[in-house]
Length: 478
Ligand code: ME8
Image 1: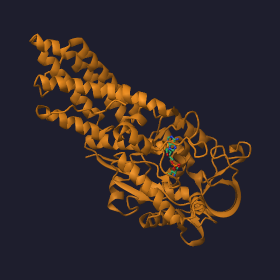
Image 2: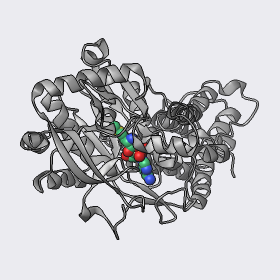
Image 3: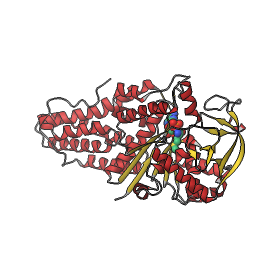
Image 4: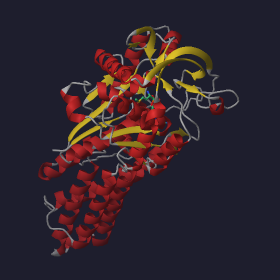
Protein backbone atom coordinates (compact mmCIF):
# COMPACT_ATOMS: atom_id res chain seq x y z
CA UNK A 1 0.00 0.00 0.00
CA UNK A 2 1.38 3.44 -0.90
CA UNK A 3 1.66 5.90 1.94
CA UNK A 4 0.66 9.51 1.41
CA UNK A 5 1.44 12.22 3.95
CA UNK A 6 -0.22 15.57 3.24
CA UNK A 7 -0.19 18.78 5.29
CA UNK A 8 -1.77 22.25 5.34
CA UNK A 9 -0.01 25.34 6.70
CA UNK A 10 -0.58 25.69 10.43
CA UNK A 11 -2.49 28.95 10.74
CA UNK A 12 -1.68 31.75 13.14
CA UNK A 13 -3.92 31.65 16.18
CA UNK A 14 -4.47 35.39 15.88
CA UNK A 15 -8.08 35.47 14.70
CA UNK A 16 -10.88 33.19 13.50
CA UNK A 17 -10.27 31.38 10.21
CA UNK A 18 -11.37 33.17 7.04
CA UNK A 19 -12.15 31.77 3.60
CA UNK A 20 -8.45 31.75 2.62
CA UNK A 21 -7.65 29.34 5.45
CA UNK A 22 -10.77 27.35 4.62
CA UNK A 23 -9.73 27.18 0.96
CA UNK A 24 -6.26 25.73 1.67
CA UNK A 25 -7.68 23.25 4.19
CA UNK A 26 -10.51 22.07 1.94
CA UNK A 27 -7.98 21.78 -0.89
CA UNK A 28 -5.83 19.40 1.15
CA UNK A 29 -8.89 17.54 2.45
CA UNK A 30 -10.13 16.82 -1.09
CA UNK A 31 -6.72 15.46 -2.07
CA UNK A 32 -6.52 13.36 1.11
CA UNK A 33 -10.01 11.95 0.51
CA UNK A 34 -9.14 11.17 -3.10
CA UNK A 35 -5.96 9.36 -2.01
CA UNK A 36 -7.94 7.41 0.61
CA UNK A 37 -10.45 6.36 -2.06
CA UNK A 38 -7.48 5.15 -4.12
CA UNK A 39 -6.46 3.02 -1.14
CA UNK A 40 -3.33 4.95 -0.20
CA UNK A 41 -2.40 4.83 3.45
CA UNK A 42 -3.03 8.51 3.99
CA UNK A 43 -2.00 10.77 6.85
CA UNK A 44 -3.46 14.25 6.70
CA UNK A 45 -2.49 16.91 9.22
CA UNK A 46 -3.58 20.44 10.13
CA UNK A 47 -2.76 22.75 13.02
CA UNK A 48 -2.44 26.17 14.59
CA UNK A 49 0.70 28.28 14.97
CA UNK A 50 0.38 29.67 18.48
CA UNK A 51 3.63 31.36 19.54
CA UNK A 52 5.39 34.63 18.73
CA UNK A 53 5.31 38.34 19.40
CA UNK A 54 2.25 38.96 17.24
CA UNK A 55 0.09 36.62 19.31
CA UNK A 56 1.59 37.97 22.54
CA UNK A 57 0.60 41.50 21.46
CA UNK A 58 -2.89 40.42 20.39
CA UNK A 59 -3.45 38.74 23.77
CA UNK A 60 -2.34 41.85 25.65
CA UNK A 61 -4.73 43.94 23.57
CA UNK A 62 -7.57 41.54 24.35
CA UNK A 63 -6.58 41.64 28.06
CA UNK A 64 -6.05 37.91 28.07
CA UNK A 65 -3.19 35.57 28.83
CA UNK A 66 -1.61 34.28 25.62
CA UNK A 67 -2.56 30.72 26.63
CA UNK A 68 -6.28 31.65 27.00
CA UNK A 69 -6.17 33.68 23.83
CA UNK A 70 -4.82 30.84 21.68
CA UNK A 71 -7.18 28.32 23.31
CA UNK A 72 -10.10 30.38 22.16
CA UNK A 73 -8.84 30.88 18.62
CA UNK A 74 -7.90 27.23 18.36
CA UNK A 75 -11.46 26.25 19.25
CA UNK A 76 -12.76 28.40 16.35
CA UNK A 77 -10.47 26.53 13.97
CA UNK A 78 -11.51 23.13 15.27
CA UNK A 79 -15.19 24.02 15.03
CA UNK A 80 -14.87 25.38 11.51
CA UNK A 81 -12.96 22.33 10.28
CA UNK A 82 -15.57 20.09 11.82
CA UNK A 83 -18.35 22.03 10.07
CA UNK A 84 -16.50 21.78 6.77
CA UNK A 85 -16.04 18.00 7.14
CA UNK A 86 -12.25 18.28 7.23
CA UNK A 87 -11.29 14.67 7.82
CA UNK A 88 -7.83 15.26 9.28
CA UNK A 89 -5.88 12.51 11.01
CA UNK A 90 -4.18 14.81 13.49
CA UNK A 91 -4.29 18.45 14.59
CA UNK A 92 -1.16 19.98 16.08
CA UNK A 93 -0.97 23.05 18.27
CA UNK A 94 2.51 24.48 18.64
CA UNK A 95 1.86 25.06 22.35
CA UNK A 96 1.57 21.31 22.93
CA UNK A 97 4.26 19.49 24.86
CA UNK A 98 4.89 17.00 22.04
CA UNK A 99 5.71 19.89 19.71
CA UNK A 100 8.03 21.52 22.23
CA UNK A 101 9.93 18.27 22.75
CA UNK A 102 10.29 17.65 19.01
CA UNK A 103 11.50 21.22 18.41
CA UNK A 104 14.13 20.91 21.13
CA UNK A 105 15.40 17.68 19.57
CA UNK A 106 15.51 19.28 16.12
CA UNK A 107 17.39 22.35 17.39
CA UNK A 108 19.87 20.16 19.26
CA UNK A 109 20.58 18.32 16.03
CA UNK A 110 21.06 21.66 14.26
CA UNK A 111 23.49 22.78 16.94
CA UNK A 112 25.43 19.53 16.48
CA UNK A 113 25.55 20.11 12.71
CA UNK A 114 27.70 23.20 13.40
CA UNK A 115 25.58 25.24 11.02
CA UNK A 116 24.42 27.55 13.79
CA UNK A 117 26.31 30.61 15.00
CA UNK A 118 25.54 33.57 17.26
CA UNK A 119 25.54 37.07 15.86
CA UNK A 120 24.43 40.56 16.68
CA UNK A 121 21.77 41.67 14.27
CA UNK A 122 20.01 44.88 13.51
CA UNK A 123 16.93 44.83 11.37
CA UNK A 124 13.40 45.98 10.67
CA UNK A 125 10.88 43.54 12.08
CA UNK A 126 7.18 43.39 11.23
CA UNK A 127 5.48 41.55 14.08
CA UNK A 128 2.36 40.84 12.00
CA UNK A 129 4.46 39.12 9.33
CA UNK A 130 6.71 37.65 12.02
CA UNK A 131 9.70 38.36 9.80
CA UNK A 132 12.50 40.83 9.15
CA UNK A 133 11.96 43.17 6.22
CA UNK A 134 14.56 45.06 4.23
CA UNK A 135 14.32 48.74 3.22
CA UNK A 136 13.51 47.48 -0.28
CA UNK A 137 10.41 45.63 0.98
CA UNK A 138 8.85 48.78 2.45
CA UNK A 139 6.35 51.08 0.76
CA UNK A 140 6.50 54.62 2.15
CA UNK A 141 8.30 53.25 5.16
CA UNK A 142 5.50 50.76 5.91
CA UNK A 143 5.15 47.00 5.64
CA UNK A 144 3.11 46.66 2.41
CA UNK A 145 1.01 43.79 3.80
CA UNK A 146 0.09 45.26 7.16
CA UNK A 147 0.46 48.99 6.46
CA UNK A 148 2.38 49.59 9.65
CA UNK A 149 5.93 50.68 10.32
CA UNK A 150 8.26 47.82 11.23
CA UNK A 151 10.19 48.01 14.48
CA UNK A 152 13.93 48.58 14.48
CA UNK A 153 15.43 45.69 16.42
CA UNK A 154 18.91 45.07 17.67
CA UNK A 155 19.32 41.59 19.02
CA UNK A 156 21.87 38.90 19.46
CA UNK A 157 20.45 35.79 17.78
CA UNK A 158 21.45 32.34 16.64
CA UNK A 159 21.81 32.24 12.88
CA UNK A 160 21.55 29.30 10.53
CA UNK A 161 24.08 28.83 7.75
CA UNK A 162 21.54 28.86 4.92
CA UNK A 163 24.07 29.78 2.23
CA UNK A 164 25.83 26.45 2.58
CA UNK A 165 22.70 24.55 1.49
CA UNK A 166 21.46 26.72 -1.37
CA UNK A 167 23.39 24.91 -4.16
CA UNK A 168 22.08 21.52 -3.02
CA UNK A 169 18.50 22.75 -2.76
CA UNK A 170 18.78 24.28 -6.21
CA UNK A 171 20.00 20.97 -7.62
CA UNK A 172 17.16 19.05 -6.02
CA UNK A 173 14.59 21.48 -7.39
CA UNK A 174 16.05 21.26 -10.89
CA UNK A 175 16.02 17.47 -10.73
CA UNK A 176 12.46 17.53 -9.37
CA UNK A 177 13.56 15.60 -6.31
CA UNK A 178 12.03 18.53 -4.51
CA UNK A 179 9.07 19.23 -6.71
CA UNK A 180 7.50 22.68 -6.66
CA UNK A 181 4.30 23.37 -8.48
CA UNK A 182 2.91 25.26 -10.30
CA UNK A 183 5.79 26.07 -12.63
CA UNK A 184 5.60 29.83 -12.03
CA UNK A 185 6.22 29.29 -8.31
CA UNK A 186 9.11 26.94 -9.00
CA UNK A 187 10.69 29.69 -11.10
CA UNK A 188 10.08 32.15 -8.29
CA UNK A 189 11.96 29.90 -5.85
CA UNK A 190 14.89 29.45 -8.23
CA UNK A 191 15.03 33.20 -8.74
CA UNK A 192 15.18 33.77 -4.98
CA UNK A 193 18.02 31.27 -4.69
CA UNK A 194 19.90 32.82 -7.60
CA UNK A 195 19.55 36.33 -6.25
CA UNK A 196 21.41 35.20 -3.13
CA UNK A 197 19.80 34.84 0.28
CA UNK A 198 21.23 35.82 3.63
CA UNK A 199 21.48 33.38 6.53
CA UNK A 200 18.42 33.59 8.76
CA UNK A 201 18.03 33.80 12.50
CA UNK A 202 16.49 30.83 14.25
CA UNK A 203 16.07 32.44 17.65
CA UNK A 204 14.75 35.64 19.18
CA UNK A 205 16.07 37.44 22.21
CA UNK A 206 13.12 39.42 23.46
CA UNK A 207 10.17 37.19 22.70
CA UNK A 208 8.84 35.39 25.74
CA UNK A 209 5.86 33.58 24.25
CA UNK A 210 7.74 30.79 22.55
CA UNK A 211 9.78 27.64 23.02
CA UNK A 212 12.99 28.15 24.99
CA UNK A 213 16.14 27.80 22.89
CA UNK A 214 17.98 24.68 24.12
CA UNK A 215 21.01 25.64 26.19
CA UNK A 216 20.41 29.40 26.21
CA UNK A 217 17.82 30.87 28.55
CA UNK A 218 18.07 34.32 26.96
CA UNK A 219 16.54 33.11 23.67
CA UNK A 220 13.36 31.53 22.31
CA UNK A 221 13.11 29.63 19.03
CA UNK A 222 12.04 31.89 16.16
CA UNK A 223 8.34 31.28 15.58
CA UNK A 224 8.73 30.48 11.88
CA UNK A 225 11.42 27.90 12.54
CA UNK A 226 9.38 26.02 15.11
CA UNK A 227 6.23 26.34 12.97
CA UNK A 228 7.92 24.54 10.07
CA UNK A 229 8.97 21.79 12.44
CA UNK A 230 5.29 20.95 13.09
CA UNK A 231 5.40 18.77 9.97
CA UNK A 232 7.72 16.37 11.81
CA UNK A 233 6.83 16.92 15.47
CA UNK A 234 3.26 15.78 14.69
CA UNK A 235 4.82 12.45 13.64
CA UNK A 236 6.79 12.19 16.91
CA UNK A 237 10.13 13.19 15.42
CA UNK A 238 12.71 11.71 15.44
CA UNK A 239 12.06 8.22 16.83
CA UNK A 240 8.29 7.75 16.60
CA UNK A 241 6.71 5.01 14.50
CA UNK A 242 4.67 7.58 12.60
CA UNK A 243 7.80 9.52 11.70
CA UNK A 244 9.48 6.39 10.37
CA UNK A 245 6.40 5.48 8.41
CA UNK A 246 5.23 8.77 6.96
CA UNK A 247 8.24 11.07 6.62
CA UNK A 248 9.11 12.51 4.10
CA UNK A 249 5.85 14.30 3.42
CA UNK A 250 4.42 13.64 -0.01
CA UNK A 251 2.78 17.03 -0.23
CA UNK A 252 2.82 20.35 1.60
CA UNK A 253 -0.04 22.63 0.51
CA UNK A 254 0.78 26.30 1.10
CA UNK A 255 -0.07 29.78 -0.19
CA UNK A 256 2.34 31.92 -2.26
CA UNK A 257 3.26 34.30 0.54
CA UNK A 258 5.03 31.55 2.49
CA UNK A 259 6.89 30.08 -0.46
CA UNK A 260 10.41 31.00 0.69
CA UNK A 261 9.93 29.46 4.12
CA UNK A 262 8.78 26.15 2.67
CA UNK A 263 10.80 25.73 -0.50
CA UNK A 264 14.12 27.09 0.82
CA UNK A 265 14.32 27.47 4.62
CA UNK A 266 12.56 24.21 5.48
CA UNK A 267 14.59 22.02 3.06
CA UNK A 268 17.81 23.67 4.31
CA UNK A 269 16.99 22.89 7.95
CA UNK A 270 16.23 19.28 7.02
CA UNK A 271 19.42 18.91 4.99
CA UNK A 272 21.46 20.22 7.92
CA UNK A 273 20.22 17.43 10.18
CA UNK A 274 20.43 14.78 7.45
CA UNK A 275 16.70 14.19 6.97
CA UNK A 276 14.89 13.60 3.69
CA UNK A 277 13.11 16.49 2.03
CA UNK A 278 9.38 16.66 1.35
CA UNK A 279 8.63 15.27 -2.08
CA UNK A 280 6.40 18.07 -3.27
CA UNK A 281 5.16 21.55 -2.40
CA UNK A 282 2.01 22.79 -4.09
CA UNK A 283 1.63 26.55 -3.89
CA UNK A 284 -1.76 28.16 -4.36
CA UNK A 285 -2.70 31.75 -5.13
CA UNK A 286 -4.51 34.08 -2.74
CA UNK A 287 -8.02 35.50 -2.66
CA UNK A 288 -8.81 39.14 -2.52
CA UNK A 289 -12.37 40.22 -1.69
CA UNK A 290 -13.89 42.86 -3.96
CA UNK A 291 -10.40 43.66 -5.20
CA UNK A 292 -8.82 44.14 -1.76
CA UNK A 293 -6.77 42.08 0.63
CA UNK A 294 -9.00 40.70 3.38
CA UNK A 295 -8.55 42.82 6.48
CA UNK A 296 -10.38 43.71 9.66
CA UNK A 297 -9.89 47.43 9.01
CA UNK A 298 -11.48 47.23 5.57
CA UNK A 299 -14.15 44.92 7.01
CA UNK A 300 -14.17 42.56 4.07
CA UNK A 301 -13.21 39.32 5.81
CA UNK A 302 -15.49 36.46 4.86
CA UNK A 303 -16.07 33.96 7.64
CA UNK A 304 -16.66 30.44 6.29
CA UNK A 305 -19.27 29.87 9.04
CA UNK A 306 -21.50 32.58 7.57
CA UNK A 307 -21.26 30.92 4.18
CA UNK A 308 -22.05 27.52 5.70
CA UNK A 309 -25.24 28.91 7.26
CA UNK A 310 -26.35 30.17 3.89
CA UNK A 311 -25.26 27.39 1.53
CA UNK A 312 -24.45 24.33 3.65
CA UNK A 313 -21.01 22.80 4.14
CA UNK A 314 -20.70 20.73 0.96
CA UNK A 315 -21.73 23.67 -1.17
CA UNK A 316 -19.15 25.92 0.53
CA UNK A 317 -16.45 23.34 -0.21
CA UNK A 318 -17.49 23.38 -3.84
CA UNK A 319 -17.93 27.17 -4.08
CA UNK A 320 -14.46 27.91 -2.68
CA UNK A 321 -12.69 25.43 -4.94
CA UNK A 322 -14.53 26.36 -8.10
CA UNK A 323 -13.74 30.09 -8.20
CA UNK A 324 -10.50 29.95 -10.20
CA UNK A 325 -7.51 27.66 -10.76
CA UNK A 326 -5.43 27.34 -7.58
CA UNK A 327 -2.32 28.34 -9.46
CA UNK A 328 -3.71 31.88 -9.84
CA UNK A 329 -4.68 34.69 -7.52
CA UNK A 330 -8.33 35.58 -7.74
CA UNK A 331 -10.98 37.97 -6.56
CA UNK A 332 -14.04 36.85 -4.61
CA UNK A 333 -17.36 38.62 -4.84
CA UNK A 334 -19.70 37.18 -2.26
CA UNK A 335 -22.80 37.95 -4.29
CA UNK A 336 -21.54 35.70 -7.09
CA UNK A 337 -21.59 32.64 -4.81
CA UNK A 338 -25.37 32.49 -4.97
CA UNK A 339 -25.35 32.64 -8.77
CA UNK A 340 -22.83 29.82 -8.95
CA UNK A 341 -24.71 27.80 -6.36
CA UNK A 342 -27.97 28.04 -8.30
CA UNK A 343 -26.38 27.49 -11.71
CA UNK A 344 -24.12 24.55 -10.93
CA UNK A 345 -25.49 22.91 -7.81
CA UNK A 346 -29.26 23.57 -7.70
CA UNK A 347 -29.90 23.70 -11.46
CA UNK A 348 -26.84 21.63 -12.36
CA UNK A 349 -26.24 18.41 -10.44
CA UNK A 350 -29.26 18.77 -8.15
CA UNK A 351 -31.64 19.09 -11.05
CA UNK A 352 -29.92 16.38 -13.10
CA UNK A 353 -30.16 13.88 -10.25
CA UNK A 354 -33.81 14.81 -9.72
CA UNK A 355 -34.59 14.16 -13.38
CA UNK A 356 -32.77 10.83 -13.45
CA UNK A 357 -34.02 9.52 -10.13
CA UNK A 358 -37.63 10.53 -10.81
CA UNK A 359 -37.50 8.66 -14.12
CA UNK A 360 -35.95 5.64 -12.42
CA UNK A 361 -38.65 5.64 -9.72
CA UNK A 362 -41.47 6.07 -12.23
CA UNK A 363 -40.15 3.39 -14.57
CA UNK A 364 -38.71 1.05 -11.92
CA UNK A 365 -35.09 1.00 -12.94
CA UNK A 366 -32.30 0.45 -10.41
CA UNK A 367 -29.04 -0.23 -12.13
CA UNK A 368 -27.02 1.43 -14.84
CA UNK A 369 -25.08 -1.38 -16.50
CA UNK A 370 -26.26 -1.14 -20.08
CA UNK A 371 -24.75 2.12 -21.26
CA UNK A 372 -25.12 3.98 -24.53
CA UNK A 373 -21.83 4.04 -26.53
CA UNK A 374 -21.82 7.80 -26.95
CA UNK A 375 -22.13 8.45 -23.22
CA UNK A 376 -19.72 5.64 -22.37
CA UNK A 377 -17.07 7.26 -24.56
CA UNK A 378 -17.69 10.66 -23.02
CA UNK A 379 -17.55 9.15 -19.55
CA UNK A 380 -14.23 7.42 -20.31
CA UNK A 381 -12.73 10.67 -21.56
CA UNK A 382 -14.03 12.50 -18.49
CA UNK A 383 -12.65 9.81 -16.19
CA UNK A 384 -9.26 10.00 -17.89
CA UNK A 385 -8.95 13.77 -17.65
CA UNK A 386 -10.46 13.88 -14.16
CA UNK A 387 -7.91 11.36 -12.93
CA UNK A 388 -5.02 13.22 -14.53
CA UNK A 389 -6.14 16.52 -12.96
CA UNK A 390 -6.66 14.95 -9.54
CA UNK A 391 -3.27 13.24 -9.62
CA UNK A 392 -1.73 16.64 -10.35
CA UNK A 393 -3.76 18.39 -7.64
CA UNK A 394 -5.62 20.54 -10.16
CA UNK A 395 -8.95 20.51 -8.38
CA UNK A 396 -10.63 23.40 -10.19
CA UNK A 397 -9.81 21.75 -13.49
CA UNK A 398 -11.05 18.33 -12.30
CA UNK A 399 -14.35 19.89 -11.20
CA UNK A 400 -14.74 21.50 -14.62
CA UNK A 401 -14.50 18.09 -16.30
CA UNK A 402 -17.24 16.69 -14.07
CA UNK A 403 -19.48 19.62 -14.91
CA UNK A 404 -18.99 19.08 -18.66
CA UNK A 405 -20.28 15.57 -18.05
CA UNK A 406 -23.25 16.89 -16.05
CA UNK A 407 -24.14 19.11 -19.04
CA UNK A 408 -23.71 16.23 -21.43
CA UNK A 409 -26.18 14.08 -19.47
CA UNK A 410 -28.66 16.95 -19.33
CA UNK A 411 -28.43 17.29 -23.11
CA UNK A 412 -28.82 13.53 -23.48
CA UNK A 413 -32.08 13.67 -21.54
CA UNK A 414 -33.36 16.63 -23.54
CA UNK A 415 -32.50 14.91 -26.79
CA UNK A 416 -33.87 11.45 -25.98
CA UNK A 417 -36.92 12.49 -23.93
CA UNK A 418 -37.05 9.17 -22.07
CA UNK A 419 -40.58 9.85 -20.69
CA UNK A 420 -41.82 9.91 -24.31
CA UNK A 421 -39.88 6.73 -25.14
CA UNK A 422 -41.47 4.95 -22.17
CA UNK A 423 -44.94 6.20 -23.09
CA UNK A 424 -44.48 4.95 -26.63
CA UNK A 425 -43.04 1.68 -25.31
CA UNK A 426 -39.95 2.31 -27.42
CA UNK A 427 -37.34 -0.48 -26.82
CA UNK A 428 -34.67 2.21 -26.50
CA UNK A 429 -36.28 3.59 -23.32
CA UNK A 430 -34.66 1.24 -20.84
CA UNK A 431 -31.20 1.70 -22.26
CA UNK A 432 -31.50 5.49 -22.06
CA UNK A 433 -32.51 5.29 -18.43
CA UNK A 434 -29.75 2.81 -17.63
CA UNK A 435 -27.27 5.15 -19.29
CA UNK A 436 -28.45 8.00 -17.09
CA UNK A 437 -28.16 5.93 -13.92
CA UNK A 438 -24.68 4.87 -14.98
CA UNK A 439 -23.76 8.55 -15.45
CA UNK A 440 -25.22 9.55 -12.07
CA UNK A 441 -23.20 6.85 -10.33
CA UNK A 442 -20.00 8.17 -11.90
CA UNK A 443 -20.72 11.76 -10.93
CA UNK A 444 -21.28 10.65 -7.34
CA UNK A 445 -17.89 8.91 -7.25
CA UNK A 446 -16.04 11.82 -8.85
CA UNK A 447 -17.58 14.42 -6.60
CA UNK A 448 -17.41 12.50 -3.35
CA UNK A 449 -13.99 13.92 -2.27
CA UNK A 450 -15.39 17.41 -2.93
CA UNK A 451 -18.86 17.09 -1.41
CA UNK A 452 -18.67 13.97 0.73
CA UNK A 453 -21.94 14.22 2.67
CA UNK A 454 -24.17 15.22 -0.24
CA UNK A 455 -22.70 12.51 -2.43
CA UNK A 456 -23.20 9.92 0.30
CA UNK A 457 -26.82 11.07 0.54
CA UNK A 458 -27.25 10.73 -3.24
CA UNK A 459 -25.63 7.30 -3.22
CA UNK A 460 -27.94 6.03 -0.46
CA UNK A 461 -30.95 7.41 -2.31
CA UNK A 462 -29.86 5.75 -5.51
CA UNK A 463 -29.32 2.39 -3.85
CA UNK A 464 -32.80 2.47 -2.42
CA UNK A 465 -34.87 3.98 -5.22
CA UNK A 466 -37.80 1.58 -4.73
CA UNK A 467 -38.55 2.88 -1.27
CA UNK A 468 -38.20 6.61 -1.85
CA UNK A 469 -41.28 8.59 -0.87
CA UNK A 470 -39.76 12.05 -1.16
CA UNK A 471 -37.61 13.87 -3.66
CA UNK A 472 -33.88 13.92 -2.97
CA UNK A 473 -33.71 17.73 -3.17
CA UNK A 474 -29.92 17.69 -2.80
CA UNK A 475 -29.34 21.40 -3.38
CA UNK A 476 -32.51 23.46 -2.83
CA UNK A 477 -32.68 26.54 -5.02
CA UNK A 478 -31.86 29.79 -3.21
O1 ME8 B 1 1.47 32.12 7.43
N1 ME8 B 1 -6.36 33.48 0.10
O2 ME8 B 1 -0.24 31.45 8.81
P1 ME8 B 1 -1.51 32.26 8.22
C1 ME8 B 1 -6.11 32.17 0.06
N2 ME8 B 1 1.43 30.45 10.50
N3 ME8 B 1 -5.44 31.53 1.04
C2 ME8 B 1 -5.07 32.23 2.11
C3 ME8 B 1 -5.32 33.62 2.22
C4 ME8 B 1 -6.02 34.25 1.16
N4 ME8 B 1 -6.31 35.54 1.16
N5 ME8 B 1 -4.82 34.06 3.39
C5 ME8 B 1 -4.27 32.96 4.00
C6 ME8 B 1 1.03 31.52 8.39
N6 ME8 B 1 -4.41 31.87 3.22
C7 ME8 B 1 1.97 30.66 9.21
C8 ME8 B 1 2.16 29.36 8.47
S1 ME8 B 1 3.21 26.90 8.21
C9 ME8 B 1 4.48 26.10 8.88
C10 ME8 B 1 3.11 28.41 9.11
C11 ME8 B 1 -3.93 30.51 3.52
O3 ME8 B 1 -2.56 32.17 9.27
C12 ME8 B 1 -2.73 30.17 2.62
O4 ME8 B 1 -2.63 28.77 2.51
O5 ME8 B 1 -1.09 33.59 7.76
C13 ME8 B 1 -1.59 30.75 3.40
O6 ME8 B 1 -0.34 30.25 3.03
C14 ME8 B 1 -1.97 30.38 4.82
O7 ME8 B 1 -3.41 30.51 4.84
C15 ME8 B 1 -1.29 31.28 5.82
O8 ME8 B 1 -1.99 31.36 6.99
